[in-house]
Amino acid sequence: MPDTQPVFILVNPQMGENIGAAARAMLNFGLTALRIVNPRDGWPNQAAIDNATGAFDDMDEVRVFSSLSEAIADLNYLFAVTARARDIAKPVFTPAGAAEEFRKHIKSGFVFGPERTGLENDDVALCHGVLTIPTNPSFPVLNLAQSVSLMAYEFFKLSDATSPRTEPLDVAKAEKFDSMFLRLQAELEEQEFFKTDALKPTMLRNIRAMLMRGAWSDQEIRTFQGIISALKKPH
Amino acid sequence: MPDTQPVFILVNPQMGENIGAAARAMLNFGLTALRIVNPRDGWPNQAAIDNATGAFDDMDEVRVFSSLSEAIADLNYLFAVTARARDIAKPVFTPAGAAEEFRKHIKSGFVFGPERTGLENDDVALCHGVLTIPTNPSFPVLNLAQSVSLMAYEFFKLSDATSPRTEPLDVAKAEKFDSMFLRLQAELEEQEFFKTDALKPTMLRNIRAMLMRGAWSDQEIRTFQGIISALKKPH
Image (cartoon, rainbow over the protein chains, first blue to last red):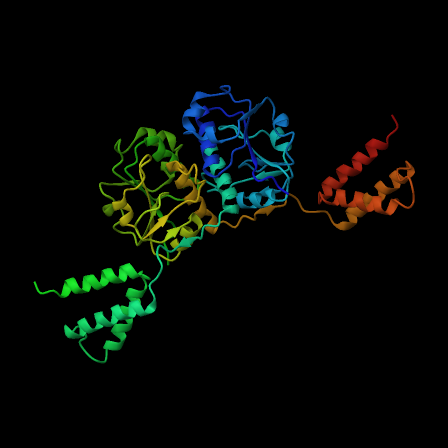
């Protein structure tokens, strides 16, 4: 059984701002386990705290280590996050693929390298798999917080049941739409809107399709009834 | 037929740094059409250029407008990017849902609000749908560049064919693995590794499973042959 969330490990991060932005992005997607290996400017770091906009308050205490092997010692499956193809023969995952693979292991870690240089080969060697976020090949380098954010987002999606498209309102029963439409038709007939009887059935079908596409609610149908009444008032 | 990419529109962005980070994230995922409505610090903006790490060089020229309605005039379908539920009755999309909906329209735009306050209701009113990125409900506010990045990433995924898991090497033919395994077995028999004949078949099956799980290549099987030879050398 996998642990409910992965651990994110930042190796030799340079800028506190980036550590803070990474923490914020993790918590945005419900992840709270952050470890840091040798942060350049020490720890705790005021720039990190400022840039996290309060995220550290709701996360587990950040654990700081002096080597990657210590930082990962209790983890079962490790992903090295790197954009560069390596000469090391390991499976390469997309974010969605890694989120899926994560489910198979007890406790997984994601290892992110420092901002400019990325992970060293010796760090990648300590991991079971590689995570490479597919990007524009002519402008591939994501910033650290962006990489963290995208991976955390894929985890959140694993358990998120939000429908890809949610309709705003309950659609009114057909009989309500119909009585409104019959009234509109009667008013238009009275105004001689339909030039010929031959075209009338087609025109009515087209108007019906156009108005039905909004999938109006009871309230919206009442609003449109009001619009019809207002328009036909004599000036 | 949809245009090959959406237009991203930043409304009243405050910090040049965020505009730059947004541009960088767009180009990371191959998007090049950025419009800005009333940037607080004017345009062009040195902080934006610095933070974009060269992205503007490969993007279309940024177009600047003084109102959202001018900025979207030529677009067919608009998504308002906002975390807050509104009282306006519009369909609400996830990033993946919006990327899918985008395919149905000729030219789509994604409208992002200013950093602190987000979009105003009057801006949302100009859009056909709402895009809400699902997040941790107790820490929901994504930064601007992060929102841009996640949406751009979903677009990139639409046309990206990268396998969720790519294997690093061609697995050797079974006969190569077999001859290595038979040699290992012979060496172990010589060293009296198998205590009893009764257990031997099970032990051999377990060792075979353990070694096969790596799905070794030709070269890796040769390396393991070398390891066997090295270990059995007399000291």
